Length: 411
Image (cartoon, rainbow, N blue to C red):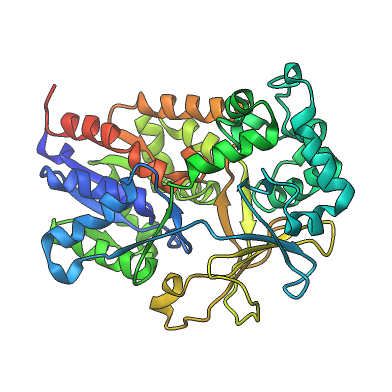
Protein backbone atom coordinates (compact mmCIF):
# COMPACT_ATOMS: atom_id res chain seq x y z
CA UNK A 1 0.00 0.00 0.00
CA UNK A 2 1.32 3.45 -0.90
CA UNK A 3 2.68 5.46 1.97
CA UNK A 4 0.32 8.30 1.09
CA UNK A 5 -2.54 6.02 2.04
CA UNK A 6 -1.16 5.62 5.57
CA UNK A 7 -2.80 8.91 6.44
CA UNK A 8 -6.20 9.48 7.99
CA UNK A 9 -8.22 12.64 8.37
CA UNK A 10 -10.63 12.58 11.30
CA UNK A 11 -13.36 15.21 11.17
CA UNK A 12 -15.32 16.10 14.30
CA UNK A 13 -15.01 17.64 17.75
CA UNK A 14 -16.34 15.16 20.29
CA UNK A 15 -14.88 12.33 22.40
CA UNK A 16 -15.37 9.69 19.67
CA UNK A 17 -13.48 11.81 17.12
CA UNK A 18 -10.59 12.31 19.55
CA UNK A 19 -10.57 8.60 20.44
CA UNK A 20 -10.38 7.61 16.77
CA UNK A 21 -7.49 10.02 16.17
CA UNK A 22 -5.63 8.65 19.19
CA UNK A 23 -6.12 4.98 18.22
CA UNK A 24 -4.75 5.59 14.72
CA UNK A 25 -1.85 7.81 15.81
CA UNK A 26 -0.68 5.30 18.40
CA UNK A 27 0.19 2.76 15.70
CA UNK A 28 2.02 5.19 13.45
CA UNK A 29 -0.74 6.31 11.11
CA UNK A 30 -0.33 9.97 10.19
CA UNK A 31 -3.45 11.67 11.51
CA UNK A 32 -5.00 15.06 10.92
CA UNK A 33 -7.84 16.02 13.24
CA UNK A 34 -10.06 18.54 11.51
CA UNK A 35 -12.27 20.10 14.15
CA UNK A 36 -15.92 20.62 13.34
CA UNK A 37 -17.75 23.94 13.32
CA UNK A 38 -18.51 23.63 17.05
CA UNK A 39 -17.30 21.61 20.01
CA UNK A 40 -19.83 18.89 20.79
CA UNK A 41 -18.30 17.64 24.00
CA UNK A 42 -20.71 17.06 26.91
CA UNK A 43 -21.76 19.87 29.23
CA UNK A 44 -23.08 17.66 32.05
CA UNK A 45 -22.29 14.26 33.66
CA UNK A 46 -22.40 11.31 31.27
CA UNK A 47 -23.40 7.66 31.75
CA UNK A 48 -20.34 5.45 31.32
CA UNK A 49 -21.40 1.94 32.35
CA UNK A 50 -18.49 0.23 30.54
CA UNK A 51 -15.86 2.79 31.67
CA UNK A 52 -14.99 3.45 28.02
CA UNK A 53 -15.09 7.22 28.45
CA UNK A 54 -13.19 7.13 31.75
CA UNK A 55 -10.50 5.01 30.07
CA UNK A 56 -10.19 7.53 27.25
CA UNK A 57 -9.87 10.43 29.69
CA UNK A 58 -7.08 8.57 31.51
CA UNK A 59 -4.89 8.46 28.40
CA UNK A 60 -3.40 11.99 28.59
CA UNK A 61 -2.24 11.34 32.14
CA UNK A 62 -0.13 8.43 30.85
CA UNK A 63 2.00 10.97 28.98
CA UNK A 64 2.40 13.56 31.72
CA UNK A 65 1.09 14.25 35.19
CA UNK A 66 0.27 17.76 34.00
CA UNK A 67 -2.23 16.21 31.61
CA UNK A 68 -4.02 14.05 34.18
CA UNK A 69 -7.81 14.35 34.01
CA UNK A 70 -9.34 13.61 37.38
CA UNK A 71 -12.75 12.00 36.95
CA UNK A 72 -15.53 12.46 39.48
CA UNK A 73 -18.29 9.88 39.78
CA UNK A 74 -21.59 11.43 40.70
CA UNK A 75 -24.97 9.86 41.41
CA UNK A 76 -28.03 10.41 39.27
CA UNK A 77 -29.69 13.50 40.70
CA UNK A 78 -33.22 13.68 42.10
CA UNK A 79 -36.14 14.56 39.84
CA UNK A 80 -38.74 17.23 40.63
CA UNK A 81 -41.97 18.30 38.98
CA UNK A 82 -43.76 21.64 39.29
CA UNK A 83 -44.72 24.93 37.67
CA UNK A 84 -41.57 26.57 39.07
CA UNK A 85 -38.80 26.00 41.58
CA UNK A 86 -40.93 27.33 44.42
CA UNK A 87 -43.65 24.72 43.95
CA UNK A 88 -41.41 21.82 42.87
CA UNK A 89 -42.06 18.43 44.45
CA UNK A 90 -39.67 15.51 44.22
CA UNK A 91 -40.65 12.21 42.63
CA UNK A 92 -39.01 9.88 45.11
CA UNK A 93 -37.59 6.53 44.12
CA UNK A 94 -36.97 3.91 43.31
CA UNK A 95 -37.64 5.33 39.86
CA UNK A 96 -36.63 5.22 36.23
CA UNK A 97 -37.25 8.41 34.30
CA UNK A 98 -40.55 9.82 35.55
CA UNK A 99 -41.96 6.47 36.73
CA UNK A 100 -41.82 5.63 40.43
CA UNK A 101 -41.86 2.19 41.98
CA UNK A 102 -43.30 3.62 45.21
CA UNK A 103 -46.49 5.56 44.37
CA UNK A 104 -47.72 5.59 47.98
CA UNK A 105 -44.73 7.57 49.31
CA UNK A 106 -46.00 10.83 50.82
CA UNK A 107 -44.10 13.05 48.36
CA UNK A 108 -45.39 11.02 45.44
CA UNK A 109 -48.94 11.29 46.74
CA UNK A 110 -48.59 15.08 46.68
CA UNK A 111 -47.63 14.85 43.01
CA UNK A 112 -50.13 12.22 41.93
CA UNK A 113 -52.98 13.09 44.23
CA UNK A 114 -54.54 10.53 46.53
CA UNK A 115 -56.54 8.89 43.78
CA UNK A 116 -53.69 8.85 41.28
CA UNK A 117 -51.30 7.41 43.85
CA UNK A 118 -53.71 4.63 44.84
CA UNK A 119 -54.48 3.87 41.19
CA UNK A 120 -50.77 3.41 40.49
CA UNK A 121 -50.48 1.13 43.53
CA UNK A 122 -53.31 -1.07 42.15
CA UNK A 123 -50.85 -2.11 39.45
CA UNK A 124 -49.65 -4.75 41.89
CA UNK A 125 -53.12 -6.29 41.91
CA UNK A 126 -53.66 -6.48 38.15
CA UNK A 127 -53.59 -9.94 36.57
CA UNK A 128 -50.10 -11.17 35.80
CA UNK A 129 -51.29 -12.38 32.40
CA UNK A 130 -51.46 -8.78 31.15
CA UNK A 131 -47.72 -8.32 31.67
CA UNK A 132 -45.54 -8.05 28.61
CA UNK A 133 -48.42 -7.48 26.18
CA UNK A 134 -47.81 -3.78 25.66
CA UNK A 135 -45.14 -2.86 23.14
CA UNK A 136 -46.34 0.76 23.26
CA UNK A 137 -45.05 2.59 26.34
CA UNK A 138 -48.06 4.87 26.72
CA UNK A 139 -50.45 1.91 26.57
CA UNK A 140 -48.41 0.01 29.15
CA UNK A 141 -48.29 2.90 31.62
CA UNK A 142 -51.95 3.83 31.33
CA UNK A 143 -53.01 0.21 31.75
CA UNK A 144 -50.76 -0.49 34.68
CA UNK A 145 -50.46 2.76 36.69
CA UNK A 146 -53.25 5.00 35.41
CA UNK A 147 -53.55 8.35 33.67
CA UNK A 148 -52.10 10.65 36.34
CA UNK A 149 -48.86 8.70 36.83
CA UNK A 150 -48.57 8.34 33.05
CA UNK A 151 -48.75 12.12 32.67
CA UNK A 152 -45.68 12.57 34.86
CA UNK A 153 -43.77 10.03 32.80
CA UNK A 154 -44.93 11.74 29.59
CA UNK A 155 -43.79 15.17 30.81
CA UNK A 156 -40.30 13.86 31.58
CA UNK A 157 -40.02 12.00 28.28
CA UNK A 158 -41.21 15.03 26.30
CA UNK A 159 -38.06 16.89 27.37
CA UNK A 160 -35.86 14.13 25.94
CA UNK A 161 -37.59 12.79 22.84
CA UNK A 162 -38.73 14.58 19.67
CA UNK A 163 -41.38 11.92 19.04
CA UNK A 164 -44.84 12.13 20.53
CA UNK A 165 -45.26 10.13 23.73
CA UNK A 166 -47.91 8.05 22.00
CA UNK A 167 -45.40 6.44 19.62
CA UNK A 168 -42.59 5.66 22.09
CA UNK A 169 -41.89 1.97 22.67
CA UNK A 170 -41.02 0.32 25.96
CA UNK A 171 -38.04 -1.69 24.76
CA UNK A 172 -36.37 1.32 23.14
CA UNK A 173 -36.93 3.84 25.93
CA UNK A 174 -36.47 1.55 28.95
CA UNK A 175 -34.49 -1.53 27.83
CA UNK A 176 -35.05 -4.44 30.18
CA UNK A 177 -38.28 -3.09 31.69
CA UNK A 178 -40.51 -5.74 30.15
CA UNK A 179 -38.28 -8.47 31.58
CA UNK A 180 -38.19 -6.76 34.98
CA UNK A 181 -42.00 -6.53 35.01
CA UNK A 182 -42.21 -10.26 34.32
CA UNK A 183 -39.81 -11.03 37.19
CA UNK A 184 -41.53 -8.72 39.67
CA UNK A 185 -45.15 -9.35 38.69
CA UNK A 186 -46.00 -5.64 38.35
CA UNK A 187 -44.84 -2.48 36.64
CA UNK A 188 -43.99 -0.70 39.88
CA UNK A 189 -42.08 -3.77 41.02
CA UNK A 190 -40.26 -3.93 37.70
CA UNK A 191 -39.33 -0.26 38.03
CA UNK A 192 -37.89 -0.98 41.48
CA UNK A 193 -35.82 -3.88 40.13
CA UNK A 194 -34.50 -1.89 37.18
CA UNK A 195 -33.75 1.15 39.35
CA UNK A 196 -31.72 -1.02 41.74
CA UNK A 197 -29.66 -2.35 38.83
CA UNK A 198 -29.02 1.17 37.55
CA UNK A 199 -27.91 2.50 40.95
CA UNK A 200 -24.40 1.19 40.27
CA UNK A 201 -24.27 2.96 36.90
CA UNK A 202 -23.08 6.32 38.17
CA UNK A 203 -22.34 9.31 35.98
CA UNK A 204 -18.83 10.57 35.29
CA UNK A 205 -17.62 14.14 35.16
CA UNK A 206 -14.10 15.57 34.76
CA UNK A 207 -13.29 17.31 38.04
CA UNK A 208 -12.10 20.46 36.24
CA UNK A 209 -14.93 20.43 33.69
CA UNK A 210 -15.32 19.12 30.15
CA UNK A 211 -13.56 22.09 28.54
CA UNK A 212 -10.42 21.32 30.52
CA UNK A 213 -10.63 17.63 29.56
CA UNK A 214 -10.96 18.54 25.89
CA UNK A 215 -7.89 20.81 25.99
CA UNK A 216 -5.79 18.12 27.68
CA UNK A 217 -6.93 15.57 25.11
CA UNK A 218 -5.86 17.95 22.33
CA UNK A 219 -2.43 18.37 23.93
CA UNK A 220 -2.06 14.60 24.19
CA UNK A 221 -3.04 14.14 20.54
CA UNK A 222 -0.43 16.67 19.45
CA UNK A 223 2.15 14.73 21.49
CA UNK A 224 1.35 11.71 19.31
CA UNK A 225 2.00 13.78 16.20
CA UNK A 226 -1.63 14.49 15.35
CA UNK A 227 -2.04 17.68 13.33
CA UNK A 228 -5.01 19.61 14.69
CA UNK A 229 -6.78 21.92 12.26
CA UNK A 230 -9.20 24.59 13.50
CA UNK A 231 -12.83 24.66 12.41
CA UNK A 232 -12.12 27.58 10.09
CA UNK A 233 -10.16 25.26 7.79
CA UNK A 234 -13.20 23.07 7.07
CA UNK A 235 -13.82 25.21 4.01
CA UNK A 236 -10.14 25.61 3.07
CA UNK A 237 -9.11 24.41 -0.38
CA UNK A 238 -6.27 22.33 1.08
CA UNK A 239 -8.80 19.99 2.73
CA UNK A 240 -9.86 18.63 -0.65
CA UNK A 241 -6.24 17.91 -1.59
CA UNK A 242 -5.54 16.21 1.72
CA UNK A 243 -8.67 14.06 1.51
CA UNK A 244 -7.72 12.80 -1.94
CA UNK A 245 -4.77 10.95 -0.39
CA UNK A 246 -6.13 9.90 3.00
CA UNK A 247 -8.64 7.67 4.71
CA UNK A 248 -11.75 9.52 5.85
CA UNK A 249 -13.06 9.22 9.41
CA UNK A 250 -16.25 11.21 9.96
CA UNK A 251 -17.46 11.63 13.53
CA UNK A 252 -20.53 13.89 13.50
CA UNK A 253 -21.64 14.78 16.99
CA UNK A 254 -25.27 15.17 15.95
CA UNK A 255 -27.43 14.97 12.79
CA UNK A 256 -27.09 18.71 12.18
CA UNK A 257 -23.31 18.38 12.01
CA UNK A 258 -23.67 15.48 9.58
CA UNK A 259 -25.74 17.84 7.42
CA UNK A 260 -22.98 20.44 7.70
CA UNK A 261 -20.43 17.85 6.51
CA UNK A 262 -22.57 17.18 3.44
CA UNK A 263 -22.49 20.90 2.66
CA UNK A 264 -18.66 20.94 2.57
CA UNK A 265 -17.74 20.05 -1.01
CA UNK A 266 -14.41 18.44 -0.10
CA UNK A 267 -16.04 16.16 2.49
CA UNK A 268 -18.99 15.31 0.25
CA UNK A 269 -16.68 14.33 -2.63
CA UNK A 270 -14.46 12.26 -0.33
CA UNK A 271 -17.54 10.52 1.09
CA UNK A 272 -18.71 9.68 -2.43
CA UNK A 273 -15.31 8.20 -3.33
CA UNK A 274 -15.33 6.13 -0.15
CA UNK A 275 -18.88 4.92 -0.75
CA UNK A 276 -20.37 6.43 2.41
CA UNK A 277 -22.14 9.50 1.02
CA UNK A 278 -25.55 7.79 1.15
CA UNK A 279 -24.90 6.67 4.71
CA UNK A 280 -23.95 10.20 5.72
CA UNK A 281 -27.25 11.42 4.24
CA UNK A 282 -29.13 8.90 6.38
CA UNK A 283 -27.30 10.05 9.50
CA UNK A 284 -28.10 13.67 8.72
CA UNK A 285 -31.80 12.81 8.59
CA UNK A 286 -31.92 11.10 12.00
CA UNK A 287 -34.18 12.58 14.70
CA UNK A 288 -32.73 15.37 16.80
CA UNK A 289 -33.66 17.40 19.86
CA UNK A 290 -33.04 21.10 20.43
CA UNK A 291 -31.63 22.26 23.75
CA UNK A 292 -31.45 25.94 24.59
CA UNK A 293 -28.58 26.09 27.04
CA UNK A 294 -28.12 29.18 29.22
CA UNK A 295 -26.01 29.85 32.30
CA UNK A 296 -27.64 31.89 35.01
CA UNK A 297 -28.19 31.97 38.74
CA UNK A 298 -31.37 30.22 39.77
CA UNK A 299 -32.60 30.24 43.34
CA UNK A 300 -33.55 26.65 44.03
CA UNK A 301 -33.07 24.84 47.31
CA UNK A 302 -32.24 21.39 45.91
CA UNK A 303 -29.18 19.12 45.75
CA UNK A 304 -26.70 19.66 42.94
CA UNK A 305 -27.57 17.49 39.98
CA UNK A 306 -31.30 17.82 40.64
CA UNK A 307 -33.57 18.18 37.64
CA UNK A 308 -36.93 19.90 37.48
CA UNK A 309 -39.56 19.18 34.86
CA UNK A 310 -41.35 22.52 34.57
CA UNK A 311 -45.00 21.92 33.69
CA UNK A 312 -46.48 25.40 33.45
CA UNK A 313 -47.71 24.83 29.87
CA UNK A 314 -48.21 22.14 27.25
CA UNK A 315 -44.47 22.01 26.44
CA UNK A 316 -42.62 20.81 29.54
CA UNK A 317 -39.04 22.02 29.91
CA UNK A 318 -36.15 20.67 31.94
CA UNK A 319 -34.13 22.73 34.40
CA UNK A 320 -30.94 21.18 35.69
CA UNK A 321 -29.09 22.26 38.84
CA UNK A 322 -25.48 21.67 37.85
CA UNK A 323 -22.67 20.20 39.88
CA UNK A 324 -20.06 22.92 40.55
CA UNK A 325 -17.45 20.85 38.71
CA UNK A 326 -19.49 20.92 35.52
CA UNK A 327 -18.62 24.54 34.93
CA UNK A 328 -15.45 24.82 36.97
CA UNK A 329 -13.57 25.85 33.84
CA UNK A 330 -16.03 28.70 33.38
CA UNK A 331 -15.07 30.06 36.79
CA UNK A 332 -18.70 30.09 37.90
CA UNK A 333 -19.66 27.56 40.53
CA UNK A 334 -23.26 28.80 40.66
CA UNK A 335 -23.90 28.15 36.97
CA UNK A 336 -27.20 26.61 36.05
CA UNK A 337 -28.48 25.07 32.84
CA UNK A 338 -31.96 25.46 31.44
CA UNK A 339 -32.72 23.00 28.65
CA UNK A 340 -35.87 23.51 26.61
CA UNK A 341 -36.99 20.88 24.12
CA UNK A 342 -39.40 21.60 21.31
CA UNK A 343 -39.06 24.28 18.68
CA UNK A 344 -35.56 25.21 17.54
CA UNK A 345 -34.25 28.34 19.25
CA UNK A 346 -31.57 30.59 17.76
CA UNK A 347 -28.25 29.56 19.22
CA UNK A 348 -29.63 26.27 20.50
CA UNK A 349 -27.48 23.20 20.75
CA UNK A 350 -28.68 20.24 18.71
CA UNK A 351 -28.41 16.78 20.25
CA UNK A 352 -28.92 13.35 18.70
CA UNK A 353 -32.27 12.07 19.88
CA UNK A 354 -32.22 8.84 21.90
CA UNK A 355 -33.88 5.85 20.30
CA UNK A 356 -37.65 6.01 20.77
CA UNK A 357 -38.71 2.90 18.87
CA UNK A 358 -37.24 -0.51 18.12
CA UNK A 359 -37.58 0.19 14.40
CA UNK A 360 -35.41 3.28 14.83
CA UNK A 361 -32.80 1.27 16.73
CA UNK A 362 -32.75 -1.32 13.96
CA UNK A 363 -32.59 1.29 11.21
CA UNK A 364 -29.57 2.99 12.79
CA UNK A 365 -27.91 -0.41 13.37
CA UNK A 366 -28.33 -1.03 9.63
CA UNK A 367 -26.73 2.34 8.92
CA UNK A 368 -23.75 1.41 11.12
CA UNK A 369 -23.41 -1.91 9.30
CA UNK A 370 -23.58 -0.20 5.90
CA UNK A 371 -20.93 2.32 6.94
CA UNK A 372 -18.74 -0.50 8.25
CA UNK A 373 -18.49 -2.01 4.78
CA UNK A 374 -16.42 0.93 3.48
CA UNK A 375 -12.80 0.08 2.71
CA UNK A 376 -10.99 3.29 3.66
CA UNK A 377 -13.55 5.28 5.58
CA UNK A 378 -15.35 5.25 8.91
CA UNK A 379 -18.52 6.87 10.18
CA UNK A 380 -18.47 6.99 13.97
CA UNK A 381 -19.66 9.20 16.80
CA UNK A 382 -22.65 9.55 19.15
CA UNK A 383 -25.06 10.25 16.27
CA UNK A 384 -25.18 6.57 15.33
CA UNK A 385 -25.67 5.50 18.96
CA UNK A 386 -28.75 7.53 19.82
CA UNK A 387 -26.61 10.33 21.25
CA UNK A 388 -24.87 8.02 23.75
CA UNK A 389 -21.32 9.41 23.97
CA UNK A 390 -19.85 6.54 26.00
CA UNK A 391 -21.36 3.92 23.66
CA UNK A 392 -19.81 5.71 20.69
CA UNK A 393 -16.37 5.48 22.31
CA UNK A 394 -16.88 1.92 23.57
CA UNK A 395 -17.79 0.58 20.12
CA UNK A 396 -15.06 2.46 18.30
CA UNK A 397 -12.05 0.20 18.90
CA UNK A 398 -12.83 -2.71 16.52
CA UNK A 399 -13.74 -0.30 13.72
CA UNK A 400 -10.57 1.74 14.07
CA UNK A 401 -8.48 -1.40 14.45
CA UNK A 402 -9.78 -2.73 11.15
CA UNK A 403 -9.11 0.57 9.37
CA UNK A 404 -5.61 0.96 10.73
CA UNK A 405 -4.73 -2.58 9.69
CA UNK A 406 -5.76 -1.71 6.15
CA UNK A 407 -3.80 1.53 6.25
CA UNK A 408 -0.69 -0.27 7.50
CA UNK A 409 -1.06 -2.96 4.83
CA UNK A 410 -1.85 -5.76 7.26
CA UNK A 411 -4.27 -8.41 6.01
